[in-house]
Length: 168
Image 1 (spheres, rainbow, N blue to C red):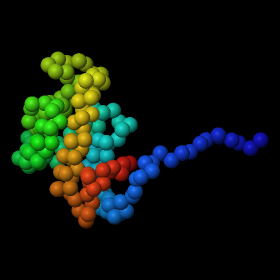
Image 2 (cartoon, one colour):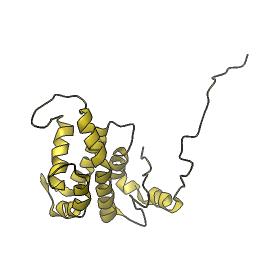
Image 3 (cartoon, rainbow, N blue to C red):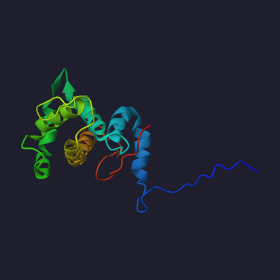
Image 4 (tube, rainbow, N blue to C red):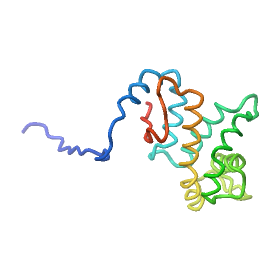
């Protein structure tokens, strides 16, 4: 008989999702110059990427934007000050947001537990759950920074368009 691959295709999109055509157009027209930055932010929310790598993608975005000659700029602290109250309400740490982000980076990049080196493995369940709570705020910080520094011709990331198209 004729070849038959017996495939079934189903829509995986949220039934209530609507395309923001203006933002899509602006992303297409104005996103090329910032494609690497958009890729880091996109990877930071890609559920198929392990959570610690998602965090590190967002951290890398912040490094690119706010770290010069090995030092964080004063603009970085100003940005994070805008989110300190939201961070405090999450009750993840008593550290200021800036110190918390750097400590979390060390735990993700070096797989360093609270005071001891655990080796190169995935995060513990406790750390992964903590990161799951912190990641949306960090994504909001990054989207806000992108909008402040690169939001051109109506290309806005974040609450107006919570799902950033994946850049591949």
